[in-house]
Image 1 (cartoon, rainbow, N blue to C red):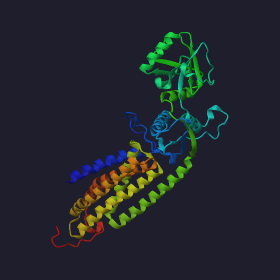
Image 2 (cartoon, rainbow, N blue to C red; image 1 turned 60 degrees about the horizontal axis):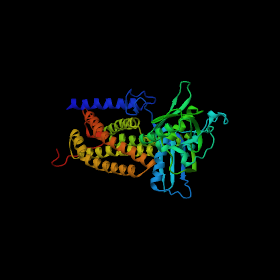
Image 3 (cartoon, helix red, strand yellow; image 1 turned 120 degrees about the vertical axis):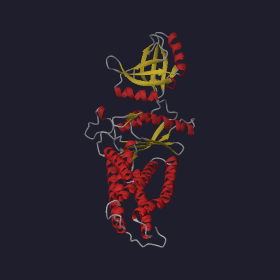
Length: 451
């Protein structure tokens, strides 16, 4: 039996060491990639309220004869989400508010460099660029302009009868570079649209096609040969401009125009202060609780302290591996789960003390204490997990973050209490003298029939 306990302790030690390796700052991680998840990048992800970023509230701005229904707003949300993902923003929040509003939160997207010349092109505010990208409808038109080309960047209102292709006819769009390094946009058409485009280009050789996005001329080109499935848009693009247009084309046109009704830039200093206060509160609370546990439960309290340290390492290792985006609400969930983990140990120790008072030997009292406490721990934690599932399923933003971190913490607390605490207690009583009731804050008062 002792060998079995030592084997479990060795396994716990390995898991703890692995968790510590993951949690330490600037951990190199593991040279493994599963799908799109690269485990060599192990950093804590912070939400908008911790690292700052952009919070924008949009409202639908339809034409007088245009109706905005739930389907249209859902389509807007999906298109905005695709455009945000293409920007490479980690853990954005895009959600519908009411019937005609959309909230977009972009963590980590800061404003312009304060030391940069505002007039310089490279010092443009990325927040303004992001908002402009979201609001643009991104409507691509390829128009037959006969024998006349149009200059780039000119406003051109196309006659609907001259429109050959629209953005909805595109299968994909991406940025490429020619042999001279100039940026261009390569696009592919859907099969049905490709047939139509081939028929048109075959019968209009030598004529001009003008490509516009939101009625702005991107490029005019002569039809030199039939084009079927794919083509290239050339222009005086910088790489960023080409990428921007490609995102618009790739993810379609907004069915409803948007206007900005609120634009907030959350600075990271506010989040850092709030996080520092939250962490400080958590540390102070944990120290006070552990001091009480050690003073009141003696040897069992020391075991609880060790188990709690292992619990914290495991929780934050999981946060890095998943990864979980931490917000202030999520930090609150972690602190609450810390209390749940301590509560599980208290239930076990109280049941153990009751068994000791009844006259049981400490070793048998520990086993009986765990067996008696387990149903209460299981039922209360399962109830908490069910509540977390409801909050995560029906909540949004910070509510979901709170539910996720609390659920992870509760699940790990069950493992910590039943496996780590139990194994450490079983090994502690093997030390000569520790198996005495006084080391568990109890006195043995045998009752009749006690064993």
